Image (cartoon, rainbow, N blue to C red; front, side):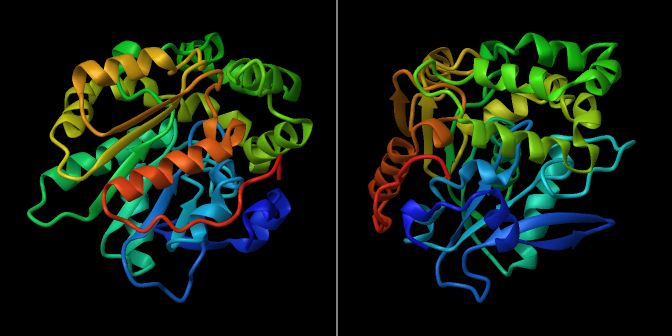
Length: 309
């Protein structure tokens, strides 16, 4: 698929299929279902959206490697059990189960937001193994360091004692306003993108479990030593590509990275907000491929991305 033909949400849904992980159904898109030599690239999305977040860079990524994307449990088209205790630990288990189901022995990760924490847990597990499975990890905007994360009011409300009520009262209008506020002022989400984001959230009543999914915020605090330690002890190459204008995890998160981790490929995108892969897909793809080239991987790519899918 040419890069300018980034799939819209309906096309994305048609590209995927469901994989059973225990009692749950996990939606996955695999660019090479018959397999391809070499490590695959696994895309791990953020809260509260889903794997379609990567649609604009999907064709460019697929030009050089096998790419696997999944909707984590409780997100997008995957199962959304109502009374479930969601956790980053379980989501990492699910990623490993999907990778195993697809016969992938080693893999790269490109993660965003909530997915950053999942990737940190995967790194922590990899650090403890005698043989590595992770070939590299690249992070987009996310709460890598709890002390530098600046949650929005809606996130704090969802995480508080009235979280269940806030979930029930979440409207499309409120959701769209909250999403737009974390994008760059010059790169707001389009009406088509907002419609897709809401569709993914509201699918199977997903907005009603937002207060359960948001429990990753206190989980990050509890796991801070393990997950930040995974960054400093990582044995595979790391990268951080960050929208600097993001009020949640922008330039201040990069500054913290430089203090705590002080290694890897780092790129700041001026004027770009919390969803760099949506707001500035060409820049994200260019930096990600430059990172791959810096660690000796082919720099194959398709034509430039163009506009919203």
